[in-house]
Image (cartoon, rainbow, N blue to C red):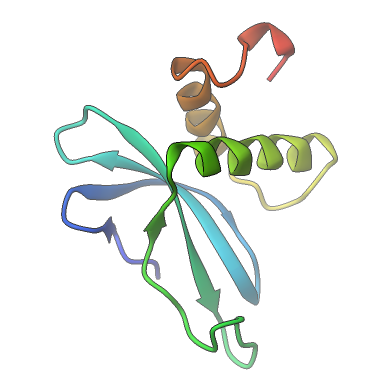
Length: 109
């Protein structure tokens, strides 16, 4: 079960990807007042596997430039057929990128 918040002002909105048994999870977050969305990640661990840090982490919100890079990478991975990308979270991530003019809708995303 993932923590449902990141910091004091952000709530988990939709999970995008979760590596199993250990790795990272990527998710969309919404500011409590609904004015902004952000991309966040966390290290996850499911026994007996371990992460790079040896334990699970809290959610970490990515700065805009890193979030755009991570999101574009997820788009490429999905286009290449990567399994386990959750559709609802993926669609919200793409909408966020379009709203921020980080991708152009005509590109076919």
